[in-house]
Structures are given as structure tokens and as C-alpha cells.
Image (spheres, one colour):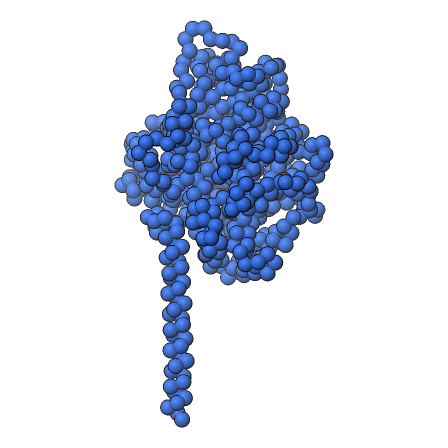
Length: 590
């Protein structure tokens, strides 16, 4: 398999993860004030504490809070914090302890660029971010063995966190007290995914390119060891996530270290396609060295926290994903779905209009079609001749069937999301794994966005507000979808009364369409699936040029349009010049 850089995907992901810096208001925004008000420090408790709010686990006794029928435990450390000399080291479990600590406040968000569109980035940040949160029903907690659902947040591996209200589990557990809900923080960006192996002292940091993923593994080890104290069943754990969170779920199902730590996996709009080659990962390392003047890991570890934050803002746009290092992550991670993870039940899906999430970032509805068309062309031109032909066949088909405005968006949807999801599902099903597929079609109230990337998350987590429009979702659909997800976590089958959901297999390809109507359809994008399949060996990497580092992404479009126009004018000039010369020669001969 080859690896390719897609300029189009870069711009989309920059906005998705909040990397595009927005001017910060002089006064804190309402959202910033709200996030600051949530913050507090979990203190050591000396003396008496309410036993009804306390849970004893291996690394201590944690005292949470009660909200009606719900118990919440926030900011529990699942590992020794990676500060000081532990920066860029693999996470290690906290030692066993009898220390009594509060669990009232979320832990720090991981270091990331601040953005008014990213609530977690406005919550206090720190390197001491390896914490998790547990929501469980108070009734019968001491004796219950409930299915456990572990949520891994998205954000392109560079942003977001559990403090964001969109990642809370309180409303979910109130609606479904039969499960225990866990959310986890992990290292992001430069501290979580920076390959240091090329440095002179880098041999001790052989796994630094995938620390964020290894943090997730350590969190799952903690869950397996301790979740019974919260009424959870360590023998029935489902991991779930959206976007980069779903990519994490797919990768966790593909690596040795995570085997046996969970039993089911839900992937919402994310896959193993979002991984980077070692070569592309090391481009980021060179950028960091150039920005800091550092020569060794030791030099980098001497950087202060403020310097790390500034560095993240300076070079953080040079984003990359978990590293296909051939050790933790295979060079062909799809191959792990050929039997390696066949024992893990999987629920995999995408939304109908994934790419329309970025309409605003592309200048609005009118400019969106132009922008996506240009980027689709960039992608096609970056492929080798054989793959270029495959891509062009897809685009030609889409233009002929669906009209001129759809092919570029459909191409991005299928290349980035639908194709990889189907590739994983069909391999897993063919290898004997139990697999279920869905497509989310419920549009947002503003038709500009359609059923875009992330439009299903508030339905699944019951967080109460839709992205983009900030409106309440359809409560009936939310209840139905949540029950499907809970049934899958409990039994491995998402069917509910009135909606039988058969397993996916490579001939029938049963897919549940979730939207204004709920129905099964076999192979709903059959022709597009076949046309996009040859391109699945092209991975998606967010590596981009100096131009995009120094200017808004749309300057790249303007430059590209100008260059294209210039080339066209030059071609026309030489074309007419040649014709004029021929005519002059003929006239002279006469």
C-alpha cells in the first residue's frame, strides 16, 4: 500500500479540529466563562467522607457527586501523569494506593490550540491530562454488573476533551441506567503523536509517535481492573467514538496491546485510513526542531509548558495522525480486519453528507461547490496514473448520474469516510466477525449542512444540542438510536422491537438507514462503493505546504485558481500563435 497527501483533506481537518486560529475576543466569551466556571481541583480528603459517594479502586478511594439517581466521578487519574521527565514517555499505571481524593471536577484538557468553536480547548489545559470520568446509576451500584460503554472523543487527534459538554455521559446514563458510561482524555498533537526516533537520543522514545493511542490502552486497562467497583462488568466493555475517536476505536481493535480489554466496538465516521506514514510523521518533527532550535529530546524536554503551548500554536497546523510504524500499528492496518479482530463485535457507520460539515470554512454554500471541486481535482492529480484513472471513473460516473454539483462532495465523502468504513466492515464480516452497518441521514434543520459529519453524535450521547444549529434533536429518533447502541453494547446485536437489524455480510450488505424514516437497505451505495474500492490503499494524511501554514486555506484556492487561469491563458496564447504562424506560412507559400 502507498501513502498520499491530500490537500483537500488537510483544509477540512484544519477546521474540524479547530486548528485555524480565530481572533480571541478582548473579553472572555460566554462559552469561555462557562468552561472556566466548570473548573476545580480535586483535593485529597483528610478525615471523614460520605461512604455512599465513595468508590474504592486500585489506585485510591474516589469521592464523587450525586445528581438525583446518578453518581458521577470526574477527573480520576488512570496513569502517572506525563509531566517533567515523563514528557513523551509511555503512560504507566498509578501505583496502588489508599489515598482518598475528590472526583468532582474534570481533569485538565490536553494541550491544544484554543478556539472559540472548541469548548474543551477553553477549559484549563495541562500535561497532567490522563484522567477519565465515570457515570453510573446509584441504585444497586455495589452489586450490579452492567455493560460498560467507553467514549473516546474525536478532534483529529489534536483537539477536544472530556470537559466539553458534547462528551458528557450524564444524560445518557439517566436515560439508560442499565449501562455504565466512561469517557477518557488522552494526549493530543505534539505531546501525543510526535515521532522522536530520528533524534540522537531518540532510541528511548521509540513509541512517541503513538503515545495518545497508548494512553487509551492504559485507560482501558484501568477500566478492566476497576470498573466493577462502579457497577460495571469488566467482561462486557464496548468502546465507541466519533471521527478521530472512531479512528482510535478501529486502531485499538487492530493492535496487540488492546486485545482482551474490550469486547465490542462502535465506529462513527472514522477508520484506520486516518493514519500517517513514518516519513510524514517525521516531517512534523523537523518542523518542531526548526521552530525550537532543539537538537535532542533532552532539549525539547527543557521547554516550559508555555513554550509547548506556543509551539503547538506555531507548528500545530502541521497535523498528522497515529503512525503506521510497523510495530504498534501495521503498515497495512486494514489487514487486521482479515481475522485478527474477528472476535470483536463491530458497529460501523457514516453520515450521508460528511463533508458538508465544513461548508462555513469553505466560504459558504456558494463557494463550497467550487472549493470541493478544486480539492477533488488536486487529489486526482496527486495520484499515480492508474489510480488517477480510478478516481476519474468515479467522478465521471457521479457527474453523469447525480449532476454537476455532487461529484466532488461525494468523492470526498466516499474516499474519506464511506469507503474505509465499508472496507473494514466487509473484511471483518468475511473473516467471520459479527458486523453491523448504518448510514445516518437525518439532516440538520439548516439544509446547507444536511446530515453532515458529527450530526448524529448528540442523538447517540443524548447531549441535547445539535452541532451548527444548536437546536434540540428529534427526541423520538434519539431514544430509538440510543437504545440500538445500548442493545449492541449489552448483547452484540443492535436490533430493537420493530426494527430487526441483520448482520452485514459481503453479498447482501444489509445497512440500516437512520433518519426521518428507519429502514434496511442492501448495499445502498453499490456503484460508488465499487468505484471507490481501488482507492482504499490511499491513506489520508494531514500534511500540508508552507503556504497553508502562513495563510488561510482559501488563499491556496485563490492561488490555485490564479495558476490554473494563467496556464489556460498561456495555452491559448501559444495555441493561437501556432495557428497564426501556420496561416502566415501558407500565405507566404502562396
